[in-house]
Length: 354
Image (cartoon, rainbow, N blue to C red):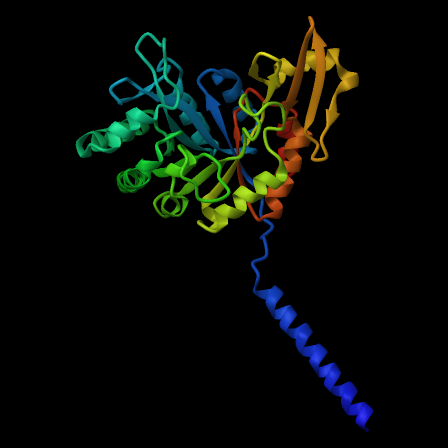
């Protein structure tokens, strides 16, 4: 009888442990299996190729961001190439049920298009600190968006001073109030971080506040390796996961949109440069036998040409699908690509199955 009671107590104890464990697991959010909504940028320099990729695949790309708007030296938002048929293309895409966005970037461009300054934080600082200039800036963005028929605005101001964090948040809050009055949407694109930082760029964005004041926050998951770091993948899955998991401590998953880069980079002893996939194809043909892949399926090759050593890391359909699978495992169901026209065109067919 004593042994029976002992066994009974042990069984009850184990049962309570299992029950508590099941309750604990049940309380954890389970990533919902949802179809992925893909978006992509169309740039002014790859406009024709980008638009063609979207029009040929209207069921794949449901958000299209037109990287179209830069800043004049006085801070006024302007279309870099106003001769491109933005209005007609936007109307066509909207007819296919595709949402269209005007992306504005803090590249300062002079009228002659020479001596441009990329990602200028000082001009943005001067605009943000002046109530009147900030209001005029917002109004100009609204006018351009309405003029060309876009559904929303995507603000891609990079390398901002960390000291502008609060006033940048205020600007986004004010812009959100403006766009809502016109039935528009607001997106903000931010540089990656896996913790709070005080550095220029990542330190200037309060993800939690931005999520509160926008329809979405897009996080750039690339340039882990660049001209400063030396050769390596544009992104690794552990690095991506650390950034997107940090995002979840600041925002709901429905507000966060990871961004994947579709092209690659080539490093040599004296320089590095970005490469489109179409520019990599001839190199792959010439050096097929030395193409390798990382454990995460990122392709790379090293070769010698004219006495110079070269290393290329790039993305193709196989490597991008690995990243998509990893993001889906975290529960993300929206993904944006930077940028169309620079990618492996076999990606379209693969995305239809996601």
